Image (tube, rainbow, N blue to C red; front, side):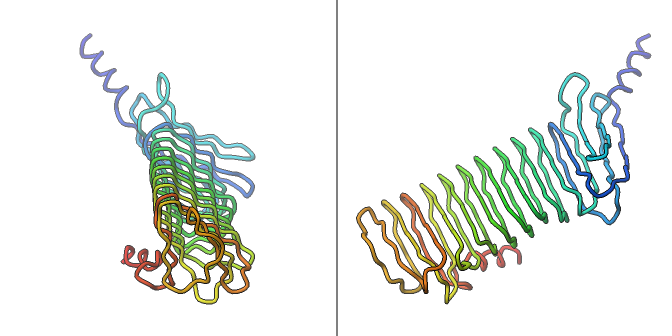
Length: 295
């Protein structure tokens, strides 16, 4: 009798291998919900979704398809599943939504809209086109090679967007924001306790707003840029690698100046940090820093 009980317990806790493939067509989207663990989504050149995972007998992965979506869910025997490592392969054209709690998310090779939301997990995305929304409370956000309307948001970690194009909104509270080699006509970047770097062209008619309370700002400005620049700092400093024609008042260290015809609107605010303008390729240029990091 005792042997039978032990055998039953082992059967319940034994690892289970999951490998499921569903054919998909244009118009369907991928919806992944995993309470904890890691989710990795990689693009492949098949019109199918493949889900692979290893789970204990107490957890399960449910995969279902409809005319509009393929849904992947993790579920425990008596509530949310423990940490499960999910590996999903999907066509690059398939729009993707991933949600979780204690979940880290990695996406590679997508050429479609992406939405990721987690509480305690890092988000690392390469690719994405269209509407891209990445959010984490206790995790960092990294986005590379994206095109479209970009929204990246953390609370207690850093946010990075690199080699991407489109309108960008980047926010965090206790972290840095690095926008490196970004081609955008609209940028809104804000943090409370962190630095902000922006490296990319300043487009004619564009809008660029960088704001931090307890941090420094660095803006890369190419020669020939056309922008009306407003600078505000209470107890910080302003530095520039090239001469700027200051005007306005320095009471409370608020002033403005115009580069070229002043086509773009640039607002730089730091309560007690240094605001600096740098030239592309200089030692302080964020794009140059990124190249050194990559090397």
